[in-house]
Length: 96
Image 1 (cartoon, helix red, strand yellow):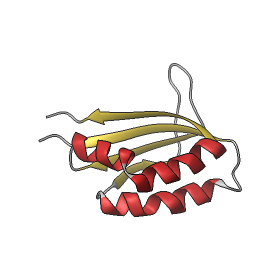
Image 2 (cartoon, one colour; image 1 turned 180 degrees about the horizontal axis):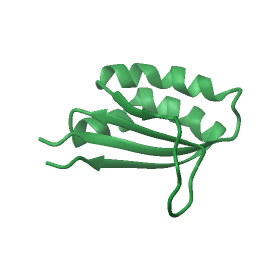
Image 3 (tube, one colour; image 1 turned 180 degrees about the vertical axis):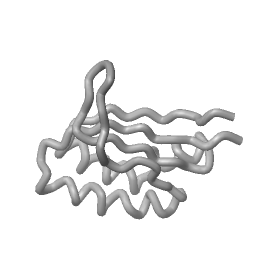
Image 4 (tube, helix red, strand yellow; image 1 turned 90 degrees about the horizontal axis):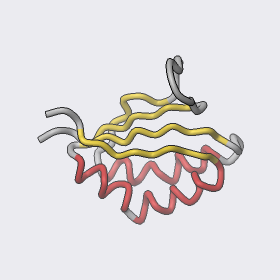
């Protein structure tokens, strides 16, 4: 079964409070076996529009990635993220 991925592009509006999101999201990441493949770092925007930060999180499968996003733990963290950053957020299934 293919892995599931979160692909998230983020523009942080309030850097002072953004760490609160990361701390709040940690329990969901741990509960659902999230593995960070990309977390910030250097990038080059070759086409289209970029955001300041790019993140790719790997999960066991697509359904696990969805359950993590929909979990009460992540939804509480999401509220903090939404208040402090703009994001494009996709959940995708990996190649078989």
